[in-house]
Length: 91
Image (cartoon, rainbow, N blue to C red):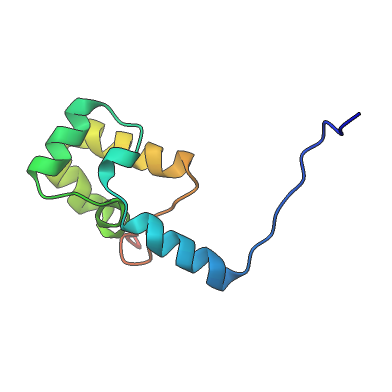
């Protein structure tokens, strides 16, 4: 009978960086967000996941408003993607 436990997989930092780079190039449509948030972001020129990750929180909130910015950030966190070092403010 197959084991019901799940294993863990480890990858190197270099491999993770390459995978994250590929994810950053993916269109925003890949994120599970409402069509309203997606349309609002695209209207403002946000077309790829990396644009959201690399934009400082203050800019996202100013551009998209609190609800849309938080929805996009939650979708990124759900997939284990955090803001890039350039997108994170040091407040």
